[in-house]
Amino acid sequence: MQLSLKFVTGLLLASSAAFAAQDDIEVNLHRRNLFINAGNQLNVDAFTKHLVKVNNKYKGALENFKRNMGHDHPLLSILLNSIKRDGQGSLSLTDVQDELLWSGDVTFGGQTFGMDFDTGSADSLANPGAYNPKKSSTAKNTWSTFSASYGDGTQARGLVYTDNFEIAGLKAKDVAIGHSFTKFIEDQEPAQGIAGMAFPSIQTFPKKYKPFFESLKEQKAVKSGVFQFTLKAGQGSTLTLGGIDSSKYKGDITYVDVDPSQGFWLTDAKVNGQSIKAIIDSGSTVITGPTAQVRSIVQKINGMSAFNQDGTLMYTYDCNATPNVTISVGGTGFKLSKSQLSFGRTNGQCVLPIVGQDGLPMNAWIVGDTFFQSVSIIFDTDKNRMGFATQA
Image 1 (cartoon, rainbow, N blue to C red):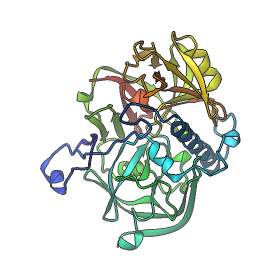
Image 2 (cartoon, rainbow, N blue to C red):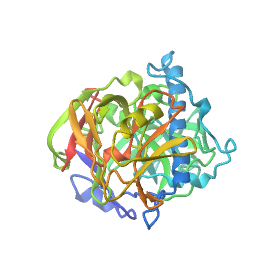
Image 3 (cartoon, helix red, strand yellow):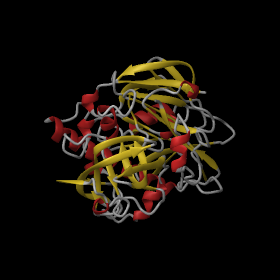
Image 4 (cartoon, rainbow, N blue to C red):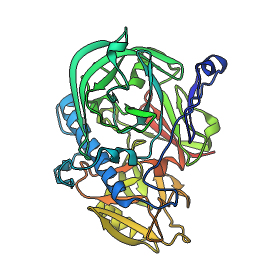
């Protein structure tokens, strides 16, 4: 049976009765973007602090890769020792709320809470209070510790448990969950954790404790090892688990191979014809690349004005003029629309959601929500590939 998670803006409305009544199960999810206020003004400072957090996630993933695989990641260039921290950990915990969230309900040990689905990490972590193993008769303490630090000064630190797991009616036993003793996501209901969907080679947990989707796959809770993101700015966004929903795209699917040993959903791509390495990351808000590469591409687009915010290269443009940006994967180009290319406003100008940063841990681009909203993306763990198609 093919099961879907339906993303909508607003409160969670699903009930247990819905699971019994429907074949394709859809759960209402919560989406917020607190970078941009009601007047479409971008909080540039909060946004750049968020980018530090995202980049630090990759530093931790590369450290995990070396520990798990015994050697440095092939794309490693430099570690994030040069990332600017305002007072080394002085950033407020509330900065976590400035992220764009794609979250929905999961259940561990009979306890239901919201988690952000992240193709850029591989572990499931929960805030203290969201999951309490003492309240579960099926929880098992592995006595393995974990620690994950973020660039805004927050840290998830605690013990790995295994417990019965459920998502949209799909069930698996002994799925790993990191019970954090420290709050790493500030109060932002319903999101109280992170559900990683990358490959095990970058996970923080010991190797035998697989990411949740791998557990669903191994226990044959899903029909296939495929999941599909179709994210939209408004209503109608979906995460489909165990198959492909053909109603979410039009035309053909372009597939590219992925090397699971590298941990990330990584592929060759092009931005306006310039070749890049792209990590497809649902846990990132915009598109971030090495500063020199971003400058080389964006300075060729008419009407761009550059500025620097806390070491991040950003661009603005006249909101009446839509930039020309095409991202190509597997030889197929996907042109970004006007709405996808406007990430709020500052000083009366639209902000381009393509930014440059030095100190990235790899010479690769982190391709997030901006691109997700133009395509339906299929993540195939059976055939180790990704598929891209224009959204219906």
